[in-house]
Image 1: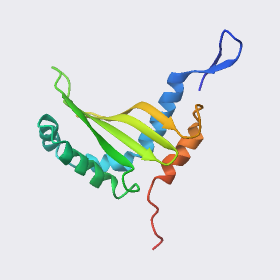
Image 2 (image 1 turned 30 degrees about the vertical axis):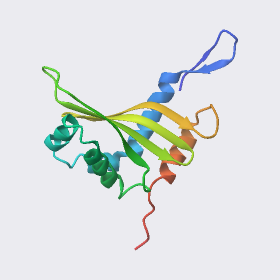
Image 3 (image 1 turned 90 degrees about the vertical axis):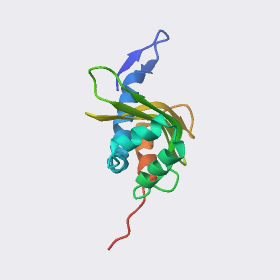
Length: 150
């Protein structure tokens, strides 16, 4: 994270660095869910997006999150798009929500033929206006299911 002096002399936080750090932490925290979601045939997902079958997509998201996160932690936000750009790989973009006790994350899940990405749109925290990356990591970890010892 980079700090710079503001005109008042107080240090200000470089917001893009904080967002990039938060996206990296968030993507790492939900990677099991993303891997599970990517097991679905892309053609089926594209068909559901084009036909606005939001219930089917929501069920897919819920069942993909079920083995890793507490109930209703990750949800489909009833918005999706398919991008067919000439000369580029097909891309599906899903509007998503991650909701846990101290934090809510609104993000886009980008499923491309070459990569998968996460673009955070907004983070809402219960504890005030200052964003704490460590607290964010803790909230993400606490949203996961704990596995019983064998």
